Image (cartoon, helix red, strand yellow):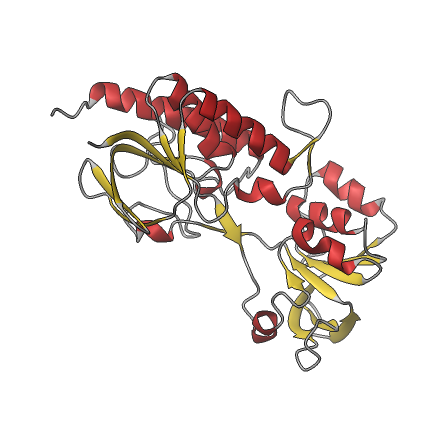
Length: 313
């Protein structure tokens, strides 16, 4: 028998969808995916999620919502969906070991860190090259590191790294940050954070030594090359939506984010009965609270869809 609701992803969007569909007595089946809890599990302090005057760590917040979803009957599977057939309902979802049928599908798979895609980066991955300060910052205690990016995520990474590192240089291709004003001020006020403006990374130095020794930077305005000495580099240059398992079956934009074209049903995708929530469909806000909000919306949209399209048999 087909599942009424299958949710893929367990970040704030997927878990909130699980809470709402659980409360609607739909017994959702939730697939945890390759990164259970999503990006929030590698976030140090969440201080802007309503209802928590004292900051919570990302894992703490995820655990609370996970338990709340379980309380309402959500079921969790520690499996990956590797392929999907959305050509007809019920939809067919292939995991590593079984096939699941679903009357409705909520895609809340989030997005993964974007890399520079240069040879030296690949060779030094795990040897000073990282995309997660929370995971790896401790290993750089007393060292100098660089963070590539200019948005809120880059500032958060840089600020967190100052707990361990003697100096953090923010490398940004423009001459001003894209981060929110409060995050910018936090960076400017931190004496351990310095800036390499109008610069991009041409090469990560240290391949022969087996660990990061520095960066070769190029000024995008003058073309001048320079060397920044550091022992680590953290990427914060955006994210790629995790939609590979869908293999082009849903409409996406130029950056790969799922498009929800219905102005009235805001989470409805190009396939009837498939809904999207969170960072996988949100290239703009990318906040835990906005992801949770779209998870709520997707759950309500799925519930109403089921009321209108009940499969017989």
